[in-house]
Image (cartoon, rainbow, N blue to C red):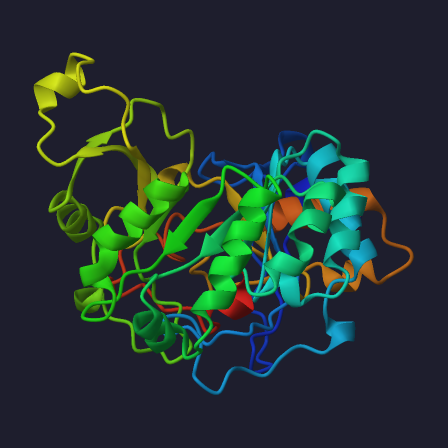
Length: 385
């Protein structure tokens, strides 16, 4: 921590667990150096910052939270607009952050969302600022968000079949989402990406329908394997629709061919999509014409990409989560709210938190069936996407 010689430095930032339990013992963070950015002990450097603006959400997706919802944070427990602005400033100007994603919960629920984005854009004219949203209410804010400086949106949409959507989200709100999607596209919040989670026996049979719908509108669909981050804690690996199964479901109606570009740390493996019957030789020889569109598959469970992870997350109450599946959180809020704390001290604390990032899936190697894996205590909505 600031004030200690580097060789003696240990992390004292571990936040208490959701039940108030102690945050754990200190660990050596002497290798952390803000001058090298948010580097961890495995040599990975986080440049993609994801900040949760709020934990509240107006849907109750089965893979995310219980039907009754969760205990929400009070307003004074959330990062304020100025605290968010300060953290982004430190991340970009000191720690090498190059991309920003605003998440929730549902960020549109936050009343000062437009003001937050306008302030961030004023501070960082060239920074890509994306937002993940369920699009409910987006039609009322899309134009203002674009004018404020939001670059683009990812919209969570697991089905365009009304009954299936209602079953997955526990809300009959598909029409509201579709209106929000149209408003985002009209406002220029593009390239617009659609995020979908396939659930066995519910929407997996509609995977190709959702891809066709996305391609027709010029959107890039991304299928995300269901992860052990559901509030009901019903997840199991056997019930997960794998990336391989997803590709097989889509291949019943389309031809997929991997795109040639380097993923460069991106979580999605991307594929060009061609009409069914297009030959591989025609695609390789450039005789198949332009693809219909593209689709991405994020295989967090079955084909993990932890070795090239470049993300750092801040929860809505100002805690660093170096790994989505880690039970360790590192509190920056008490530093932010201490008037004596300097930006350099916050940068040092943040760098120390990231130095302790685990190798994979919150443990020493990838795999959710390992004895060392312990599923996170908090659901996705409480962590931030």
